Length: 121
Image 1 (cartoon, rainbow, N blue to C red):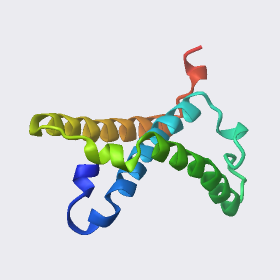
Image 2 (image 1 turned 90 degrees about the horizontal axis):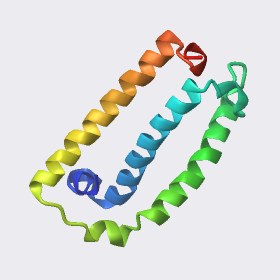
Image 3 (image 1 turned 120 degrees about the horizontal axis):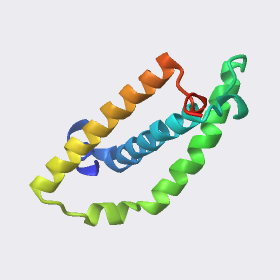
């Protein structure tokens, strides 16, 4: 992902953009688990009657530690050392695009059909 962001107008913030893209991928997966296990009402700020400012506050409190941990796991120096050949990059790009499309479709399907774990018990 860093190589993708390392060109054009995002060159100066390529590392940060790559970290944010990775976090968004993890959050999509987390939303699936929360929705599927029907835990949204038990998370602070997850209820339908929660004020918007509290949702943003909870979102920031959850996101900041994740950004910190991910940036510590994938240090900028280590990311810059990685060299991949063209075929490996192409496979990675296809996998990332497939993952995001599949995850988004699955999340929308769960949202519209309100599928939870109780449907399988």
